[in-house]
Length: 355
Image (cartoon, rainbow, N blue to C red; front, side, top):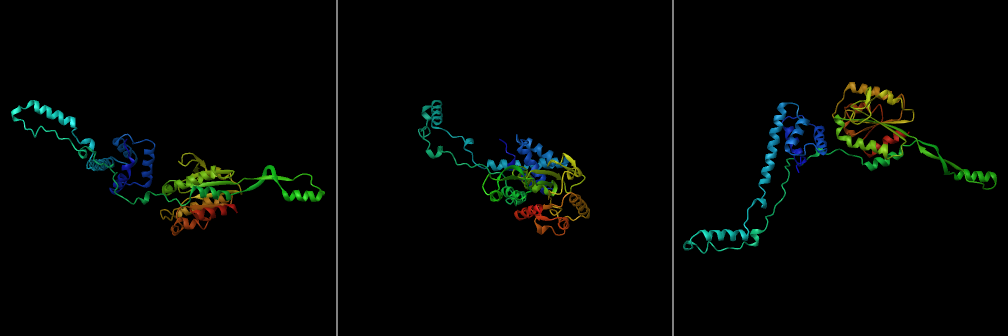
């Protein structure tokens, strides 16, 4: 079966070397398409997939086809240099006997050389298969560190941390024995009549997570996905709302991570009250080292709108703190508590939201 993943990384590097404007987003898009079954039939199907995803003009398509064919030709030459016993024709003893008998019957007896008709039994070494190895895929770059996702927090630590985000209210079933009140009632009455029970506490916390998507946040999509899933499905938080945006929450934000199902930001904030915790997950321009006055002003406006409903706000930044200086994130960190996206940062952000 054709395996396109063994050629994808080499093609990606070769095309970027000839001025193809390819980012990690295009690389992972191709990986997802291959995982979905696209471009896996043969190399022409694979080439068609890359033209659709990576080419913006006819010139780029021609250049891709040229590099594509060259890489596959190099791979075929590599495979041809490795011996394959299936392509080597070896004669068995029966074949040698047949050839010898045929030559004997055709040639006159007077010119037959006894040495030529002598049947030599092949040795075991001649009939044994030659050692072969599977051809390795072409690898031009040993250090593919830019394909590794920065993943500072494990999913298990996230599940553990959400336990500390609580808003306990005793409105559950009255089935918890209150020893102190039971003793006081027995002392007051002079005898023990019945135990005193109190209501079970329930976690009525409301968490709103605002997640930045696409662009410079693409390498951190795995983390943000785990953060959302653990809060929604693996925590005791009663209500978890999630909204997505690109760079900055604007008049409209989105209810899905593909940024298609939009909702008014004002409508979302109207569902919040003074006890709602708001966690913002964004790099704040620190990933690319940007510092734009317009973004600072717009971010300040968004934070002000959130604080009209609740003051329990924290910001998780996936970029290390040492890279915040001279960026929009450094200014925003003075407006709202901002923490790096690591174990200590997640712990401190939950403590901030719990106040």
